[in-house]
Length: 260
Image (cartoon, rainbow, N blue to C red; front, side, top):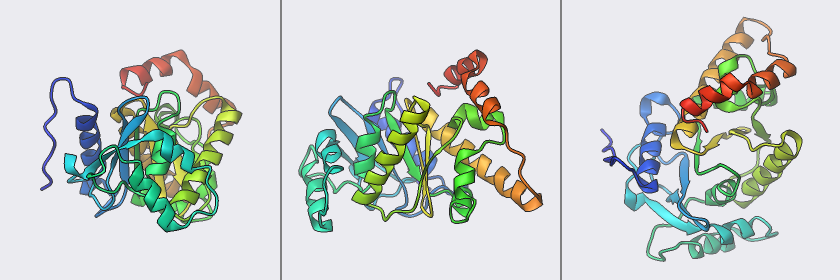
């Protein structure tokens, strides 16, 4: 059984990150196994913590977390034609402590997402139920349509959808493009990003917001798959989804649930 981090009365960002990682890595939730997935937490205006490459979410310890500077990794997203070895060099040079472990190659998109307003924690997983849809022709529809009100409360009126790109720098660049387009269109940052044939990214102000978005996205995937199996899914209209997303009572409930 994985050893859980002891949480103090006033937990540090590292303690909160470890707890989030352990919750996302629980085997029974089928969100990530072995070295799959990664998590991050902002610790200052210019630095963040991220799971080190090869670490396991379920058993993550402080030794498996690396502190990195944000700016060098965000700047990397503007690079073109870099070889994989050059990207690795940039990842290593972004570490606050040169003796710490190599950060996940996906630290690049974590660094950029943590610059979005209100985003302090990010959790990236490969949920079985979600990937069962992201690996089909229904992926974009799943990302952009809603079937239940609580999905909107926890995950937003829609997900960002990113067509398949190999993990690494190109994926980080594709995520930035898709998120910027989403923000330009809807005037707010997303809560969930889905990556075709890959997985899910949840982001929020708190670990609780990341967990809620992840678990609700999995529930939504199970409902979507069941609806498709039975017949044609009946989606909420865009107007209804927008109304639910902006209702004062729902905004209050989000606050009480720790989603804001």
